[in-house]
Amino acid sequence: MQKPQVGLVGLGTMGAALALNIAEKGFPIAVWNRTTSVTHDFHAGAGDLAARIVPTDTLQALVAAMAGPRSIILMVPAGQPVDDQLAALAPLLQPEDLVIDAGNANFHDTNRRAAAGLPFGFMGIGVSGGEEGARHGPAIMAGGLPIHWQRMRKVFQAIAARAEDGTPCADHMGEGGAGHFVKAVHNGIEYADMQMIAEVYGVMRDGLGMSAAEIAPVFARWNEGVLRSYLVEISAAVAGAADPVKGGPLLDMIVDAAGQKGTGRWTAIEAQNLGTPIPVIEAAVMARNVSSRRGERAAGEALYGPGPERVEVALDDLEQALIAGKILCYAQGFAMMTAAAGEFGWALDMPRVARVWRAGCIIRSAMLNDMAEALAEDPGRNLMLAPFFADHLRRTLPALRRVVAAGALHGLGLPALSAGLAWFDLMRTARGTANMIQGQRDFFGLHGFQRIDGLDQPHGPWAKG
Ligand code: NDP
Image (cartoon, helix red, strand yellow):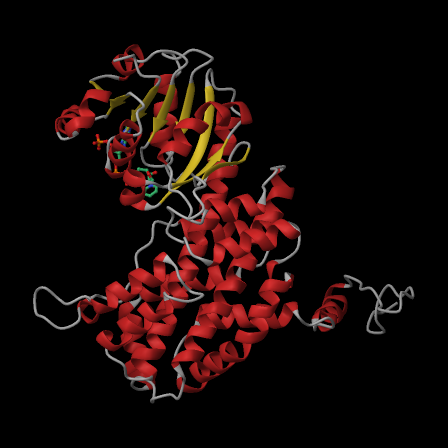
């Protein structure tokens, strides 16, 4: 076997799956893991692929086992472990070598590392799809210099998922932290998609009194239409699963406190920094935080009464509301990326982002094809103004209003769907209400305002002297 030019550090869940995927696609690969026994167990369990994998016991041995120019993928936890590995590799590598951080780095860290003048090339890439994706086809959002993308393109596009038209879901997003930024927005949208599905599940369960077994086929049916997506598909499977311990629906046995690794929170914080509204994602992050406050929620229910009365909502309305919420959420996410591209000087190509998300990643869905087309017509235009999605929104908005109103009247919390609707209503109102805010600001702080007739008036009559 030729000496590998590709290497990988960190044979955890993701690294092991990615290494097998790379080897399977015909690229010899050298691997190293901090705990040596993990490396050997991994190699021993690699079956036929073991012949293309070179296990090594030290970082020095990893580098020595490879032919130059080397490309070493890091799959270790984000943060200090990445900086530690970069520092450890620095004396071992040549300027033409390349290190690729494929973990979930904060894109600010990736920007910092890319600008740090490392003695080798550096790329940060976002990898989505979990272990299954890493093994059989992830979505890859690459950041870094175009020259480095060109070098790694063959490997990344070989291991990536493929959209229905055969295009690999691996592409270059832009320089520096652009890949990790797009991955963060992906994760924020993932939070929002999941939250909106959970909200309509809640209406079915608590508002319509449906059992999990009754809810499962509803999601399965929706997955045949506009909402066709991985998350709706797995929601049907989750709702339909039986509890292997006690029988009955497993969903009813799962504690209602959602975990998180924080990437949705990063997206929400960054949106605030950029001054770009992503209220559906923010609502989803908020809802996860509220979900973990089980004691307070129980005290709240004890104080304010039991669950809501039954509510009259058509299942078709729930489907339409979910379609509308999804379009509004993505419109916000793409607008945020447009804002970030301007702020960080990235040439982010929105249709390309939509196309990379079509397969392999958690938010993959049929609708992303249409989004890619609408964004290609006019990349700078908000998605809610694209004719195709405006048609969808005109059809689905009435149902979203009915669902949000029913939730408000019957005490069913629908934060993400409500946030989407409120944002939409602000965005379709030419004459808003911030004139009152400007008046208040001038009243207490003499901040000034502009008149709609263009006349010059620095302050209102409340200003003294
Ligand atoms: P695991 O916990 O399964 O594996 C972590 C790996 O990193 C192990 O090989 C571990 O080695 C190694 N490691 C940990 N700390 C250090 C260190 N300080 N120095 C060197 N090596 C270290 O994590 P995952 O595979 O799940 O995640 C890896 C990265 O991928 C993370 O950034 C994660 O956020 C990201 N990611 C994860 C996804 C997922 O679904 N799990 C999806 C997409 C991205 P050892 O065996 O010695 O402990």
